[in-house]
Image (cartoon, rainbow, N blue to C red; front, side, top):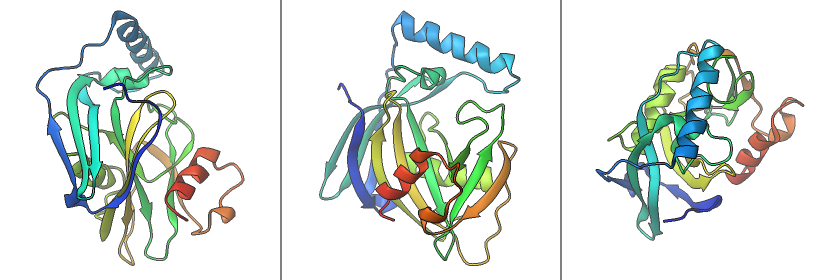
Length: 216
């Protein structure tokens, strides 16, 4: 299936309404994509990133109906997601995090990370491990990056970015009094106002676009 950039499906869905099936056959990229992935991994190594190549999920197909969202995934080389021109629908997740009163958790990404290095991002995110359910990835990344468990979680959308990176977007609400503890991938964090108009002036426009997609 040739999947074009854009919003593929809009929720919200409850976690149990999202299903996935893993294909056994690994995705085989053409040599030019593999060469580009090699170059990106080398660049990460040169700037001291501990990122390691391997296998992760690729979105092979999807279907939305009245019952929920069904995903078909297959193993693919992790480094393909680093390709700026064509990430071959490598699948990542983004778990946007909200406080009980609607504020947004923002974290500044460390300079050595593979994506959004040195920039502010919302919530937690990362690649889907082989055999993993993407909804489980949302909560795993939230635990690993911020050491919290959500009070409530829903899956908001399936999108494909301009570089053909596929992204499953979730939104999590934390219980009142929850304290976040950032991991080493972040060098600063803040709670941004519930109204995006009150966000810092240097907030990336793409973050405002995400907030708009989530209906705020």
